[in-house]
Image 1: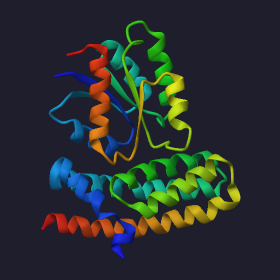
Image 2 (image 1 turned 180 degrees about the vertical axis):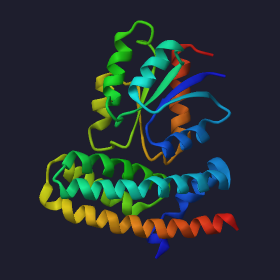
Image 3 (image 1 turned 60 degrees about the horizontal axis):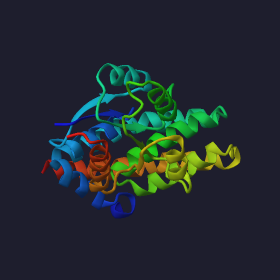
Image 4 (image 1 turned 30 degrees about the horizontal axis):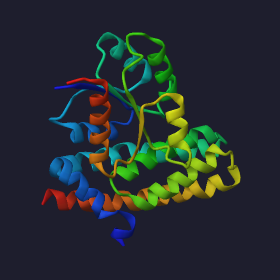
Length: 118
Length: 125
């Protein structure tokens, strides 16, 4: 299950580049900023602010990619793309999905943090 | 050690690039386009890594300003961006970026090789 949500190779890449410290810091930054991004994307979607959704989804896509949150990365890319093309009909479901995938990624990454601390 | 500028608003991306380039280059970090233009003019680096999606003033605007100023016009600039749709590479190179590297950085060696290629091409040591 976790392997579907997080690509362990990405966490391993972070460890290779900067050791466990870098992996820990990258995951911590993802968690620190991710919640706000999802909340701002949800609020922007509710108010019909496609540019706001596009901006938050773009940031989330990039950060998700860094820590291997592959499902979140994909849906954030879809949300960014829909928001960019003004496809508001698809946006609400994508933002809901992004929120769910963020929660799943955050739970899985907290598991990685616990492993890295061992 | 050669000094490069990193213009990127996301702290996680700054941390990752700093870790990748640690020991290879000195890095001046900027979180916004305006800060970057001021800093690069004050103390020009040998190369700029420039994010496209910056708040207030995006990377393409920053590039235009750098290219208009004789003090910064010839500094190589790499677009570092999560915009990776078909045609993006050609679009950014057409705007005057010297190279284009996509985020997330899956292979750090590609970024290092591009930086070295452009610095060597410029004749820096």
